[in-house]
Length: 79
Image (cartoon, rainbow, N blue to C red; front, side, top):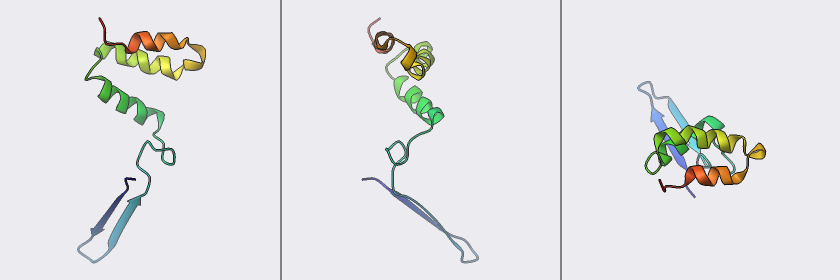
């Protein structure tokens, strides 16, 4: 498990504490669609052509109305 706790102590002595027990993207702390798209874009940029990434995101968002083979074709790294 990964969690984070940040504690700041102000000059006037106030303590500001924030703790996140579930990492972002976990089932108990899911990413928003925008955060998920940004994460995918960042990671996919290392292996896929940049122009294909928005198409993959849109295709997955509409997956209930799309043939899953479309995603497979878009996500392959072969030319």
